[in-house]
Image (cartoon, chains in turn orange, brown):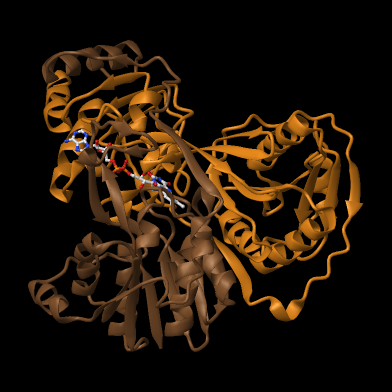
Length: 318
Length: 261
Ligand SMILES: Cc1cc2nc3c(=O)[nH]c(=O)nc-3n(C[C@H](O)[C@H](O)[C@H](O)COP(=O)(O)OP(=O)(O)OC[C@H]3O[C@@H](n4cnc5c(N)ncnc54)[C@H](O)[C@@H]3O)c2cc1C
């Protein structure tokens, strides 16, 4: 029998979607061996979060009302204490920016093998088998972990959200947070990427990635956007290079867009990019690499050089 | 103040490739400086140029071939480099987070840097966990996914890039490990002078025994058992033909969808 401890994530008063997906991943694992699923929620209005976490498959929600928002030192200390108390086999956290700010520390302190960014999990006897991607999604791998206890971070949007209607016990966990060991202080939040254009409003997005190679070449994509009367957006490297402002960036750390048609030009389709555009009605990819992940996500694909296809497409609309 | 920058040479894969067992067939692999580490090096070098930092040291776990990549880091302005390699590492098909930390923590113990700047992740196996795990192992403070850094005495004031265009402002006590996100700066190209100077900079090779690393810690508990091309999940329509043909088909699609005339 193997118990699972899953740590929920919230921000600025909202439980994040991945928390419900984590419950699904956790309850599947627990069910395979007849173990229990424990869910921890730390900081903020934990009673409200516990209510929202009363999902199918959850046996116990452990609440720790300490602080308002995420602090990695507090999370690290509390998760270690819960792990010691509950002695689960598996620790599950989201593979989010905050998940990766404490899970590796917890794993190190508890001497647990760590698998990050899992997209599927199974057990084979005592062994945990995790599926992960490598090389920006060009291949998938399975990794077997030979240990009684394992820490895993799971990728968002890979498991369905757990259904409501569970009836877990809710228990306040009496964590002993050592204030002296807290060496980081969150002083605030800032929203970035405001500005003139709102790419989330567009029906047709022409989106450009690193395949464009040079800043001068951006003109070609701008011409296409003009010809189509479309809005121009991009993947991250274009914004990192300063070729387009941050409000044009699609993805995990940029904007989530849902246009009628999204044309990805010279974009590979890394998971953090896809997080921002997979809700588009129709996805078109223009890419030289038939194995780029975007070519699989796309509804329509052109496997060719953008410097040949884009001028021809501009021609069509002049 | 001293900065240590762990630098990884990543494997890159050609468009068309074959898989051999649990790895990409070597014929289809290339090598490159990890994109995120390029930004970490730049951040360290800029701190040095600003007079905040006295020395920038890089550390790479890699065989002799990686010296080409290490010289790139030196050419961009790092002062000296450490390369850790050992026969014991040769046969591993996966160096997991725990194994990397077992090595890097000894380097931190020797060098005693005030700041360790790692990349957020590596572009090939993308664990994204080495920096934070290292921090805990050596008892340093940390912050993950940093896209702005200001040092003021013993405090690093950072912006952490969260999801959805939100940044978290955090003060972290130094010594600390910060994992650096792309876009924090504009990495420079090495100058010709930099490249010449890099040839003369110290590049020190260390074995596991030199560093007192327990060989047991390197084996790790993770075993790569399969590698395959992902199964197609959607049915993609591929437009065939010349660029004119495919552009024509796409134009029809856009007109039919009513999003362009
Ligand atoms: C914490 C975190 C947050 C992130 N947030 C985001 C985010 O919000 N948005 C985002 O986009 N990324 C984000 N990233 C980065 C992401 O991991 C990828 O690095 C990035 O999306 C890659 O951008 P790209 O597809 O333009 O470049 P690449 O991956 O380099 O792809 C370029 C593509 O262009 C193709 N190509 C090259 N030449 C041509 C040609 N002549 N014609 C046609 N095709 C060509 C290539 O085949 C390749 O597929 C984030 C990463 C991290 C770690």
